[in-house]
Image 1 (cartoon, rainbow, N blue to C red):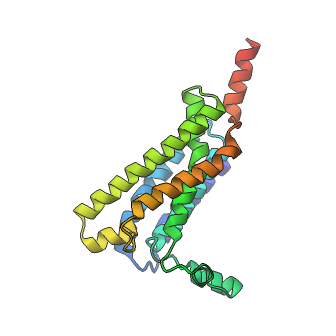
Image 2: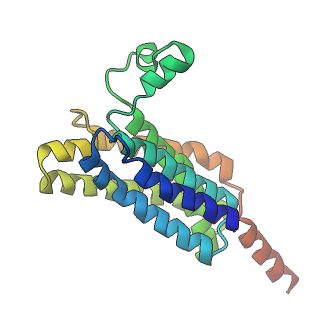
Length: 213
């Protein structure tokens, strides 16, 4: 428990640290609203409930992936500079990309990393077996993703076009929302064969106790 709270604390400290020499500090402030919400929820879940190591690592990993994206407001994450420095090759040149695809990767990982979390919630509180929990968790991933796309739409309406574009990271793609949801679905679908028979230890121990009774 203590080591988990330690890593949550490190992540909390990374939020203000990301503002140091930030290229887009105003937009970064808006980007970190979901970061802080996610950290608060993870802190409560860790302190009060028996969250499995798998769900904890998935949740914290996604928050760090988002934190990196928020630092450069997604559209300008310098992964090409990083890959060139490490390997001598630019990822965009290798794959022939014309846009920054960091936001696409984040939506893919929202499915990959989100599926175990929702599956655990459904197994723990709805008493579903692993396979139906995984299938329903896939629907949860898509529902959360769709709700977030609606939130981005509302931000585009309320804020200035420049601010909305900086937050949404559409980069001129009119099909951005549809592609984001498709990638979330793909990530969850790829994860499903890995967890279709997985049950958190708290759920498995509870079923074993019931069997003994």
